[in-house]
Length: 80
Image 1 (cartoon, rainbow, N blue to C red):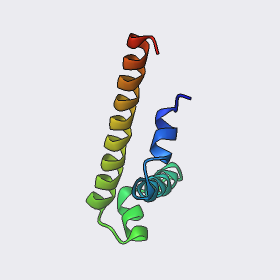
Image 2: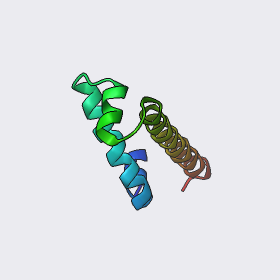
Image 3: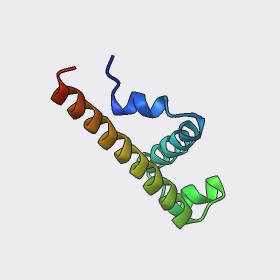
Image 4: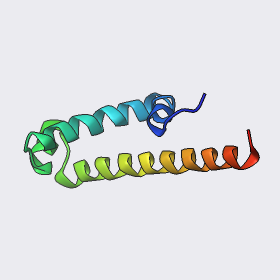
């Protein structure tokens, strides 16, 4: 069974799950029109701290996507 990058992230462990929840909360507030500064005050973080959390999660997501694509290409290339 082949997992999507998002399924791989869900299986990656509790640390990432907590980070994913933070990211989802932050992005929900962004969708509602809150600024990073306003979100930071809700989370007890600075504006730059909120931006850092978002960047860190998005970097991990991108790394998982790249790993998934690498595994897909390797599997396809070997005929498995």
